[in-house]
Length: 336
Ligand code: PEP
Ligand code: MN
Image (tube, rainbow, N blue to C red):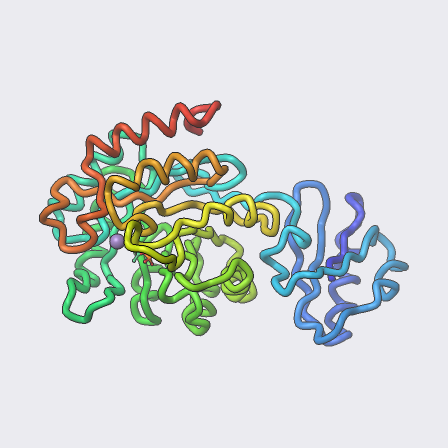
C-alpha cells in the first residue's frame, strides 16, 4: 500500500504515519516526490485496510499496490527516477546517455585509446569489464583489480564516468570502490545474495536482464536492490534467448515501453550483447532510441579482430561515430 500525504502535510503528520506503520509491524519507506511525500508500506503479508490511514491528518490517499514489486513500481512512485552524477551527466526522464567501450579491459593503452575515441564522439560513460563472466572457463577472465585501476586512470585522464561489472561479493566490494556505476550482468540477475549486497552499495547499479527472465522477474530482481535501500537502479535490456543463429540473443524492445509503464526506473539498451555481431548493432541501437530508451550500452574496439572478448560484436570507432550521428538525429532535442 502507498500512503500519499497532502502536499502541505507537516513533518509531524508524516512521522505519525511512519510510526503507525511500524507499530503494525511493517516497514515504512518514504518515497521522495516532486510535489508531495508518499510512504510505501513494505513487508505486509496480507493486503491492508485503507481505513487504517485515511482518517489520519495529512493523509490524502491510501492506494493498494497491485504489483508484486513495490519500490520499483510506478504505482509507488509516479515521477521518473533521475540519476545525476557529480560531473553533471544525468540518466532518466528523457536524458540520454551513451556508455561505450570494449567488452574487457585488456591493457592501459587499449582502454585509454578506446576511451578517447568514444569520448570524442560524445559518449559520457566508459564501459569495460575487469571481471568477466565468460561462458567458458578457458576464455579470458579479465584483469581483475588491475583492470579497475586502469578504469580509474581512464576517468582521471578523460573525465568519462566508468561502469564495470561485479560478478560476486568480493568483486562487488572492489567495483563499488572504483566505478561510478556498478553493473550486475545477465548471468547474475537472479543471484539474490549479490543483489542484496548491491542494495547496500552507495553507487548506482545497472541491472541487466537475465537471458531467460520475464519482465516481472527482472523487476523483482531490481526490487531486491531497492529493498536494501539503494534507489539508484538502471535497467538494461540486452536480449533474451531466441531461436535461430542469426543473432546471439533476441533483443526485446517491447521492454522499453513496458518498463516505462510499470516502473519509474531508467531503461537503457545494449544492442551489442543482443546482436553478437557487428553488422546488427547499429540498426538495433537506432531502434532502441526510437523505442524511447534512456541510453545505450555499446561495445567499441579499435582493433576488434585482436579483442580478447566479444570482438565480433564490437564496433570499429568509425562505425561508432556514424551511429552517434544517427542517434543524434533521431532525438529531436539532440543531446542533453
Ligand atoms: C557485459 O556487458 O560485459 C556482459 C557480459 O553482458 P551480459 O551480462 O549482458 O551478457
Ligand atoms: Mn561483451
